[in-house]
Length: 181
Image 1: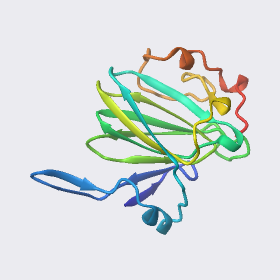
Image 2: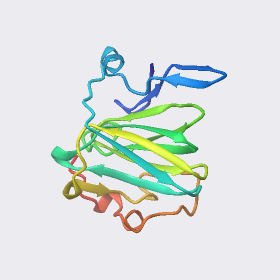
Image 3: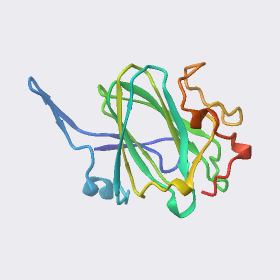
């Protein structure tokens, strides 16, 4: 695996080695040993699977607060997404900054998002299957979100009118959110 640093400390693009032939391909999507060789120590405890039917579906910006915060390793196994990580740590020199990476079934890239970051994605194709590992269990009482179009963050999602859940369309702006990360 190759680990590529981004401008946000700890957020890494993970490029697996893919072995392909006329039958298809094989790759390791997670190797504790490879991550630890790169100085990345995670104990993932939960796998999640998201399906989005229509291009332009936006999910996020999500996070969990306090002791229930989650690090995530995310990937797209069908279709393509623009994946976004936002630094929500007030003491960080990159607070409120974000990175975006295209993840797709074609490029097989993954994004590692440490605790203290918000996460979201928008689908670039119809019929998207999105998988992620989390290092902490989902806890509804710690669930938080930031409005996708918060002007303080200025994220370029590449879509003017995304398809949103009620929850995501009503998430607070950062200035009004309880982050406690």
